[in-house]
Image 1: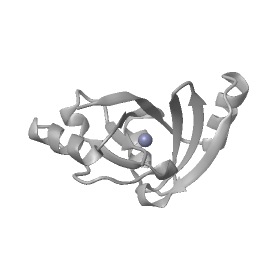
Image 2: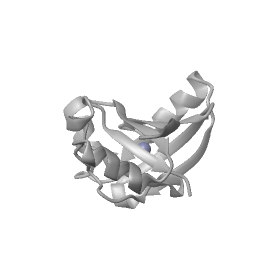
Image 3: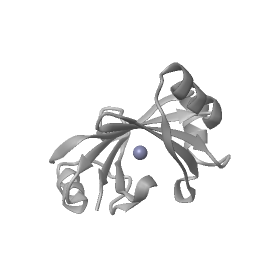
Image 4: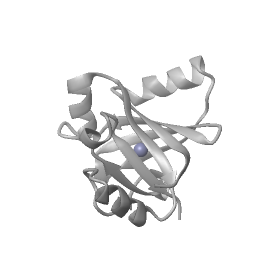
Length: 134
Ligand code: ZN
C-alpha cells in the first residue's frame, strides 16, 4: 500500500449545523463546503486543516450508517481516510493480504473522490477509507 497523507478524518455528528458552529466559533476553522451524498445517506461539511480535512457527517435517513453508528457508539470519530494513487490496485493488494473490503470497487464519494472502505474488523477497529483524486 502506498499512502501519501491523511486525506480526511470523518466525524459522526447528530446535528450538522451545531457541529459546524462549534468548529467555526470555537476551533476557528472555516467550513468551505456542505454536500449531501445521497448514496451514503449523509450530509457532509468540510474544513481544511493543513493537508488534511475534517469531514463532519450527519445522517439523512433513519436507516443510514451514521444513524446506526451514533445509536451504537454516540457522536465522535467515525473513519480515517488515506489518500492513495491507483485505488483499484491498492484494494487488490490489501484484499490479497486478507483485509475484508466493504467496497471491492471504488465508488464516488464527497468532493468527487473515488473512495472505498475497508472493514474495521480487518483494520484494528478503525473504519478505514481509501480515496483517490482523479
Ligand atoms: Zn470519508
